[in-house]
Length: 343
Image 1 (cartoon, one colour):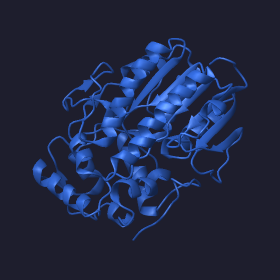
Image 2 (cartoon, one colour):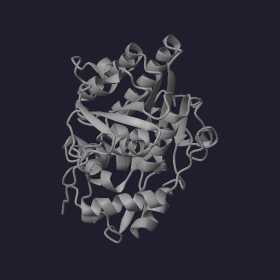
Image 3 (cartoon, helix red, strand yellow):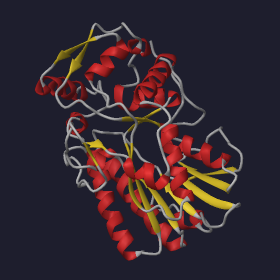
């Protein structure tokens, strides 16, 4: 990382699930002199050597270049998942806001940009083997989240062509969880009134086993460690897959919940999700459900070899921690992460 001790790192979306972990790890790094966290609302939480600025990426009045001036790297994490019923709103924040970040990085002459892409950027792929970073990133076009992540992959292709002096890293993590993210993720995906006790073992007699429901998970702190390595390594460029073992499927979840997996046709499961979403009982859209069933499994060899990165927690440990947080209404002292126990 250029500059050595005293290096300045700017983090967008610094108060969310990933941002809080990235800011904390960077603030503890002796080679980082200062961290500037950008978020729509200033948090009460303030780690060492960290400053905050209130910035809304959806606004074209935000002077991002001024915030980025003198930075050694920008870590771009800001993202809005809701409202899924109004994709134009998420497009303004996620796509147009990200383009403003990229343009400001270039205008301020920041030498490194580390961007939060996702497994959701990948085109449909296999569930019986893992793919590397060369797998196409055209997303699942019907899901706003995947469509936006894929669009930004193409935007970064152009950015790298036009700004060869900027080191660009694209992180493509699996689904990210930690205990403190439980309340936020319940509100985003399950609904603010989903009772926490439903996550306890033995609460469900059976779990639906939907064809294609095989996904990967990762602890947010492990993902944050990869971001820190990417910031510090001047050789890190391009895309990196990030995920933990084992692959999560109905069998794994059934063992965790003490429930019996029961085969459920994909059409029946989707119809139930679509009905709940249409009635606004479920925030997660059926389009995202479609995408999850088609996401490929990722091979993380490149991150291990080039970054020296490895997940320290298994996927089952990650989910057990998250479910414990869900039962307890866990959160953190930031607006997106605020805890709330239901039921």
